[in-house]
Amino acid sequence: MQLTTHLSFTGQCEAAFKFYEKALGAKIVFSVTWGASPMASDAPPEWGEKILHSTLVLGDAHLSGADMPPGDESKPQAFALTLSMKDPAEAEKVFAALAENGKVTIPLAETFWAFRFGGLTDQFGMPWMINCEKPM
Image (cartoon, rainbow, N blue to C red; front, side, top):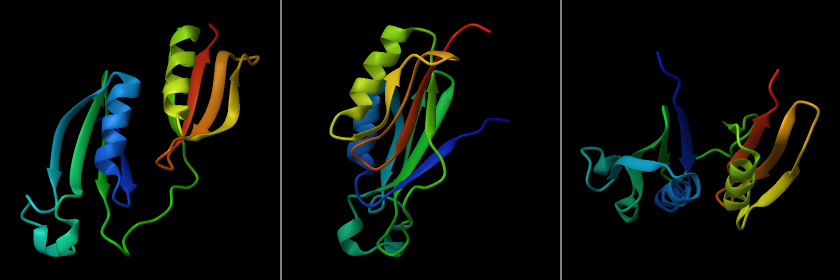
């Protein structure tokens, strides 16, 4: 069994996934637009170039996403995408990349449990936490 997180966007899925691909060193392995799918008639005609489904792979993890047609979208709440890593320098690099044009909610800093921990909301409205834990 594998847990995959799915993100819903309001028209920015392609831009977001390209940003995540670059910022995280991940790889988009699949993407299809509403217009190129058998579900084209389920979305407004102007939504044809928006993403019906996209999959991004980061190590062993998968992240999927889509642009929800107008009226079907909802604002992200009560969760954060958490990236765990071992290298503080990598944590700083990834945090800075994801924070570009976003909002830092918890500045990246050392804590009692982590060499680096911080939180942010990226430019696409998605909440992230970066956690570089100390050995237990």
